[in-house]
Length: 112
Image (cartoon, rainbow, N blue to C red):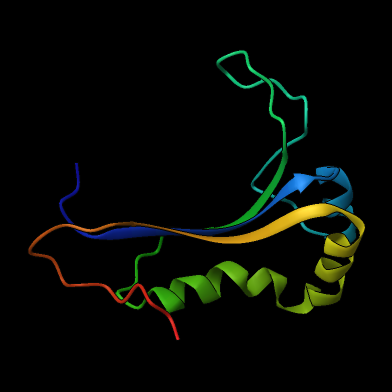
């Protein structure tokens, strides 16, 4: 188990939509998807769809640098993302998941 700070960042779309259509519209291959009604490992069904991309685990004490790496693939897709949002009941999420340990350098987790 690590006792050093780490951070994961990723972008996800969640809501009521078809992940395959999002992949086609954005011309990107997501790292993780599921559809409403897909079955979880515990046997229950998802009641929302997910489309995830840009997972970055390259820790940087300036989390903004990680965030920029995560969204780099989407920078030229703003119009398509707006269309997805207009046509579907979705939320866009830039997720930041830090693991902070006492004694390590304090990371900057509040980007400008």
